[in-house]
Length: 172
Image (cartoon, rainbow, N blue to C red; front, side, top):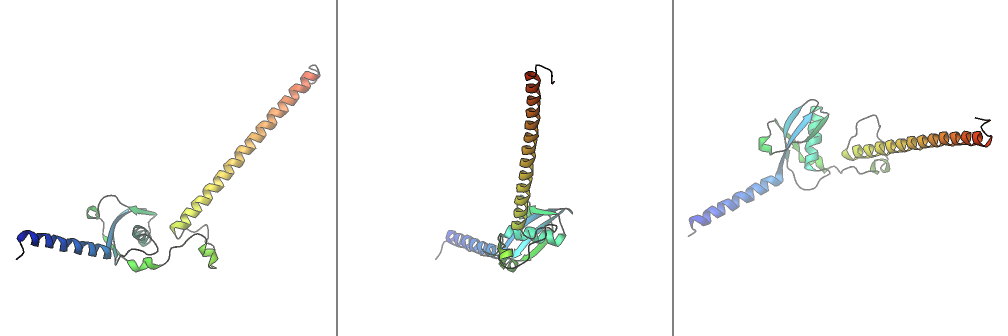
């Protein structure tokens, strides 16, 4: 006959296994968005490891699109402290492969219009890197031009001073 302590341990073990099994099927995040400001409790139904994007990014992008928000992100704290409405997102939407740099043009798809907002986080990061590189190139060109014009001005002043001195101050 099992003792009372063995039953309590067995019950605790069964509960832990049930919680862990349930956790593998459902994942929750608290999402805070801006413009317009909102907070959501995002629940991903049928969540499993793998997929095209992280579960956090799935919630963030889904809430941003659904609410037409400027930005969304994970809110600190626990989901139990999240005071927003529950929004459910199916995990099956993560099964699409994530876009990697260069695959869009390699697959024959047209290059994204730079005037439209980026469709993926990878595209957003690529655009940010390209803009930063362009800004550094422009800054470098400006510094070069500034030094060149300063050097020319110093050279001209030196030449005039030398001409003045060698002509015994007749050509000053």
